[in-house]
Length: 130
Image (tube, rainbow, N blue to C red; front, top):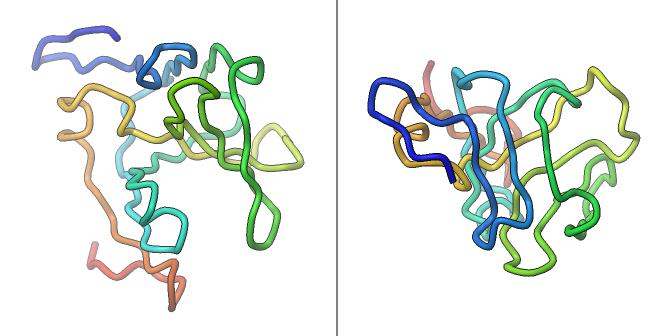
């Protein structure tokens, strides 16, 4: 993990054991906390980026995926420590979005990002006011 000063947050994160490393192209403006049956169990904080814009090392050689629901995305975790690192579209089309779990990054980065709350359990809408 890259340790950073408070002036410049690190854009590099990893799973707990370091087998999967993620390099963000920029600080996200917002992140999503979702309460769907999967996200609430994961405790993830999702930042969305265009698919292919985040450099991910150790994937797919050190990862497994989980597909559920409408089968449009797969949730990716490290094979060794089990940390969920990201989700990506099943079709893998560049230009579509994927989600990066900010819980794998320095807390100072997470603190700079506005969190939006999404009701993925019932209404499929944001439940906060922007």
